[in-house]
Length: 132
Image (cartoon, rainbow, N blue to C red; front, top):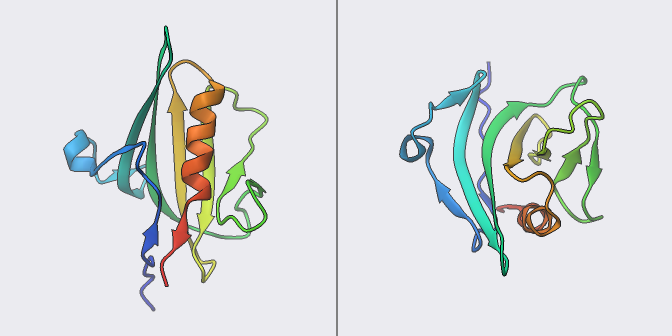
């Protein structure tokens, strides 16, 4: 059996706090998927404080993997749209170049889908690149 290796990647995380699972007090796996990082941000308005948090996990892609809505034509990330889930959570799949592995980015928003927070999440996802 051949080992699967996740290639290096880059993201513009300047608006995000990024920590390891251990630093966040979380396990190394969530539902059997390796947890790579925990991300947190907050959008401050004149009279508002809107937080969001997310996790990056790794998974295998297969024929049952759901299709996603591309954010931009040249963007790696695609939003996973689940019509049954409207609970203030957004998910993105970021397939590795070999299309066998993928990152899954899942973000929760305490205040629901605040436009400024969604824009910040989408900006992060659009910045994603697999390193050469």
